[in-house]
Length: 258
Image (cartoon, rainbow, N blue to C red; front, side, top):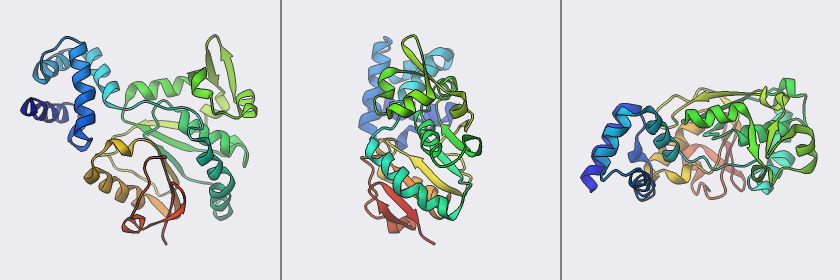
């Protein structure tokens, strides 16, 4: 079983460029075993053969491998800190911020950033890069249609201003969509670009091994401007930020040292 899984990881890396060995093994193996058993395959080997022959199945596998659980204003108190404390500091130093939403899933996170920035400047001045490894998630993000449960934490005034109900779904306003450029990216393998004033990467790093996280923290830090801010998820506290030339600015917010 272990050899079967290890061969599968090697084959997937060759085929897609995605290195599953950098994800926590128990969680990844459980997720993928559930998928191939549901599809009626007896082993990782036979599952990979099917993936190689069936593009639809390959896309479904990539969806399951990536974690597309997201909602607007997720953990609302942290977004309040961004609005009341972090953004005013950043904007005092630079009116045109360079912002990256990494592993953005289906778009709720970068659109939330844009909504918050609308309180500080015209949306025509807001530019956000949003990246994800999953083509399907990016496609859904660009469409911008969401179930009501994704909007549970959206402040009423923002919901009224930036969403239009369409049957059971809510469509995000074009003026918000136009602030975001979506791009495919593998955080583990692709260059980061930058430098950025604000990088938001939340509720993704928990799925990686400690070695992979160490590498990612270094790359994120390197991609920040001096005094730039790295905003992580509520289970992703960095316990030794100084190792990455970061210092704690607030809970789950880290400032790049000069």
